[in-house]
Length: 600
Image (cartoon, rainbow, N blue to C red):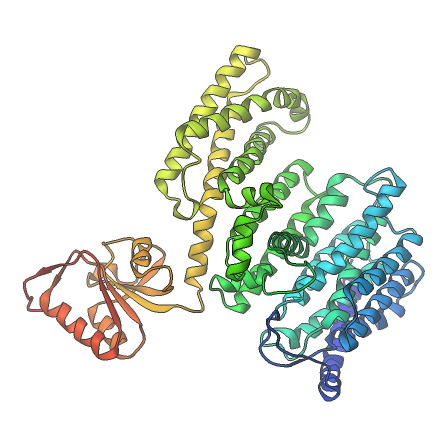
């Protein structure tokens, strides 16, 4: 194993070193010959940036690939990937039609199909062949679309490649495909050194198409290491989770562009990364968020087939549902112009899709339709192990429709579908607790009446109630949690200090300023010595009144909120004078004046 690890590290470093040396050379050539990406209305970058970074990635990876022995199981992938890189390079140099690129991708995918590379998802050869073509072409274009922000595509490809090579080595040892993929990851990391924000070079279509094609093809190579027809988890779920971010971004962008009567291929600043920046995240943070999601998908994919498949499937389904909620959140972010928004709201050709998009209650019910059986299944898995679960599975199937119907009905009765996600609080959680409790009691009574509770466990219903309440609360609180995460890392907004910790909530403070004036909260000010270094609503108490005056006079804040029930006149006058002198906005919330105090 030590020798295998040494080989992998050697190929990783070789790819990294080659790309690290070739990338600045490609940047110099591109700049001198004028092959640069110039800023456009539908592009993200603000200054001319050299292209041809993909040449460094492809040249480094292919050079390593052709030196690997034996080459027989690998040369077909290298040949087809080289063709894709060449087509991408031509597009970078002279710009070819999307249809031409699509034909080239289908030809390259057909080459792999001819040499026997298949998904093996079905027994039908024809259907499986078509699915293989769709997989290769779809993932290739997914990475092409993902190349929309500094470091995003290269980072996602590196993360996916690392997890994929880990899976390949664990399943089949150090194969030529694993060595080539390791070299490809190294080459991508070498390029990433120059591509992180602010990027000095872009990979262009030559790089994004090359990376996407290789990762799509190498999932087929990894599949070939297994004998027989692979299971749903190991063949479908694992590759999808490994490459979930390009799939997620492509699906989100395509659906929303079609809804706004845009061509999916026309480009624009409406990708997942752009939406994260639009809600206030710095560009680097937005990229890091997507990198983290890619890593989470990779970890779950590694667990499929290596641990208990039932628990792995629960984690996979939960992650996919979380990504669906994330997609709904991002779809609400405004990135289109007013004319496009009008189309989204009044489109008559697709009334069903638009209705589902803008009537969140339907989505909530559909989400719960997934969460309820997921929680019930997880409860059975936690209660029974091994053969005991197999023996109890008929009881699970028999009672599942009852549990779904009664839990949904109970949630509706208690008002679980009346809340607003971004304002989710403790009282909303209490409502869900009532609904889950009512649904659980009703389910137990129904099972007792219909089946006399034979072969059923009371512990299952208790565990189910706890899990379902956690899932319902987490899904509803997700919008608020994401909103708070964004607010605390907002790159723009008025710097704000709150004087007092016992008054109005942060939501009330933000509403008082209005949605058109985003705030970047710096922390709280409190005169109570016991509150120093404490945390209030997740923010630190940064000091007392003296610190407040010092920050105002030093120009460190843009607005101050007086959020104490009582404040003495002299102290308020001093604060007003300091704010007026520095043109700092002062907002008073339910403040009552008290006589002048000796201490100020």
